[in-house]
Length: 123
Length: 344
Image 1 (cartoon, rainbow over the protein chains, first blue to last red):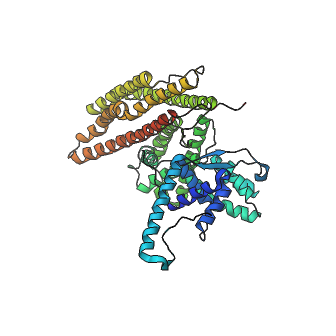
Image 2 (cartoon, helix red, strand yellow):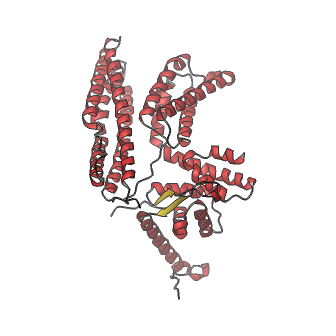
Image 3 (tube, each protein chain N blue to C red):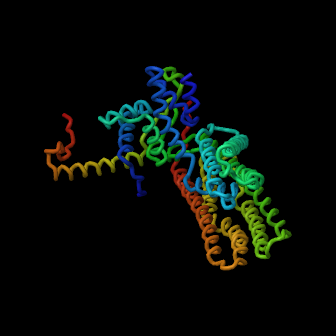
């Protein structure tokens, strides 16, 4: 199996934002989702564009232009979606983050606001 | 007015979706302008990253510093550095703001004219402000025009400022496949024709050197370079010539033909050191190193010249290895694509 390109923290946030936006993932919605994920830090719209370009060059996301809409002054949206490699890279980086979280929680305990990671069970 | 200004500042490749996003977020003119000004540096930097390569910039910078602005004969090294940096910045920005589908010959002519004008303007300003940093008269009369003509041909042969995101192994329509094949064939055809033209020019120019008043070893180097150029011309004509894929071919046949041609291209890129760098390098080496041998205590000069030549050769080989890697990736993807039949 070929090795996946490594992804940084901000790339992870943007990829998660793309994932959450689903079929409606384009600049504005991805930026809003990324802002929520990185709160309380704010996210620059330009940084989202630059990161999406970089992820596209790494082969982790793909994009295409949709039809123009009057609400956007007759301009098209550039839609994004995670590719198979992108999904795998995101999964790997989430697992790594989870291991880090568990390791820190073991040492610090719950006093620092960190508890061993548990999946949220839906009823 | 603000929208028009922002439209001009956003690179064409990103214009459509960025302007649409800014319009969608519009609350007031002030917020629109601030949004645009905050996003622009990121967009330009990202475009710059996509359209330029540090190694290519370094090579171009070395070419302009040594060969065009004659950095080694100026009174101050800064004198050649100023026009070099200016030229590189102008050309890089022209790549960032490249139209999506320009007429390439005209685009290159405009690129080089703007860069040359910027250099001349900087010389005019320096003449008034700091005359000690001016280029020598000989540089401006010979190196500058000649170097820009060579740079024009190199740029014409190798279109810059375009970015092709990696393709994905998914279904494509016959029309998309044909568009990709036709684009690939015309790019390769033009590049090979210009390269063959350059080979003829180099072979003739270095052949004439045999009658020039130069040391014997330089003449031998010129002769070898001339023969090397002829060899490369023959090699390109025999092995690199475009073999068009007929448009009567079906999807599977077109994919097979296209993959076979990309495979041939990958092999040529991988062996670039053997059929291009090595033959030219021998003649060039004789011409550069030969005259140093006649000087007293030549060892250090010879070693330095050899290192410079070897570095340039290695960089060229590495660039073509990268090309081979990219081509290999597309070959693998094409092995997995299937035909998408357009909906009725």
